[in-house]
Each structure stands twice: as structure tokens, then as C-alpha cells.
Length: 196
Image (cartoon, rainbow, N blue to C red; front, side, top):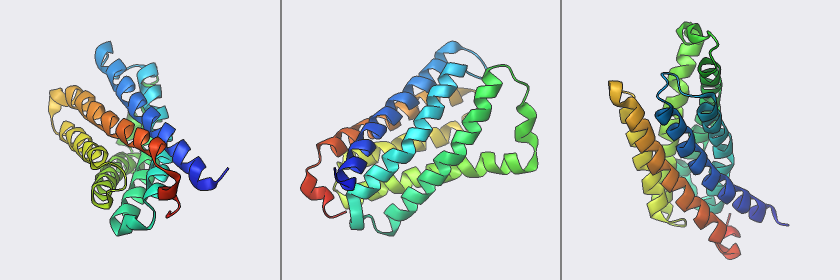
């Protein structure tokens, strides 16, 4: 079995699961009505971020040399950002389970990590979405949905009490983007992946 096929298949499945898990986790937290969400909801979001790494690799690999600087930066920022965000979500799981770890985010280094990680993730997803639109190997609609979903997520960080609604809306749009790109990855002809 060729590596390009494995990356395409794994990336496609991971992209679909990333989108579905991201939306499901945010919906579970939103409908729980709990201030810090649920352990299940946060755990599903945690899994989404882990799977996102494989989705990013699959998307990047399929677009091959046509990624350009924008695609390379998008992949690097997305992967590093989602790894850091996974650490943040891990702490949020502990908070949702009732552990008293709120003070972690008040310490200097974790506070910087809590700012830099999500920022890198958002920038990476925006660049990856824009690159997908420009490269035009995968459907442009998928890239546009990633861009739109992340802009809605970003707006949520300044929306105050409306942040949970923005998170659900952003995760729904981002979910659609990941699912759309994942299905497209799975249906790409093998000849397209030969250029990777």
C-alpha cells in the first residue's frame, strides 16, 4: 500500500472525525448548561484536536508542491497550534471534572501558552483554508468553511456572554469544512496524489 494513499485515506477519515467530534464536543458543553462544560464534551474536543493533526497532514500531502509558502505556514501553524490547544483542553477536562486547577492559567508560562496556542491554531487554519481555496485541488468550499468557522471562533473570544453561542456556531461551520474536505480527500483520484 502506497504511503500517499495511506496519508490520503487517513487524512480524509481524520478530517471527517475532527469535524464531527469538534461539533459534538461543543454541543455537549453548550447544552449541559455547566459553566466549565462536561468531561465528555471536553474529551471529545480533545480527540478532535488530536485527529486534526492527521487531517492537516492529509490535506497538505494531497495539495503537494502547489501548497506554496501559504500552505506550508498553514500546516505548521495548524499542527503546532492544535498540539498546544490539546494541552489547554486537557486542563479544561480537569476543570470540568471538578479539579481545582484554575490557577494554572494564572501562572506566567501557562498564560502565554494559553494565548499563543489558540492564536497559532486560528492563524494556521486561516492560512490552510486560504491555501486550499487558492490551490484548487480540494474543493474551495471546504477551505472557505474552515476560514469562516475560525473567524466565528475568533469573534467568540471577544463576545463576552455570547461566547458559547459563537463556539457552537464556529464549530458547526468548521465541522462542515472538515467533513467536506475529508470526503473530498477520500474521493480524490490516485493520479492527483502522484504529484504530492
